[in-house]
Image (cartoon, rainbow, N blue to C red; front, side, top):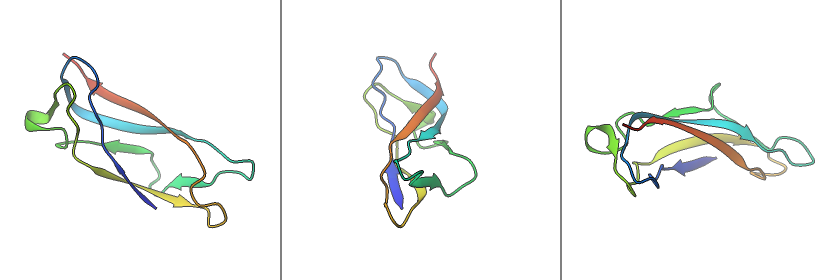
Length: 90
């Protein structure tokens, strides 16, 4: 399963790259985990995906990146994804 992922700057200040999104958790159903990342890491780097000079202005939206998940056939994606976003503000 592929999910398009974008980052929106909801702060009043510009965000400077590099910006990294970490998947810190995938919630489980009573039957167990229904999804996992395709890569060994749950990290996505938005290098060059923010805007001019790798800066995301207030209310700006990044370019789209694709998050690839493997889902359980029996349940499909029946989970919540928890993210941590790491970037620089000056």
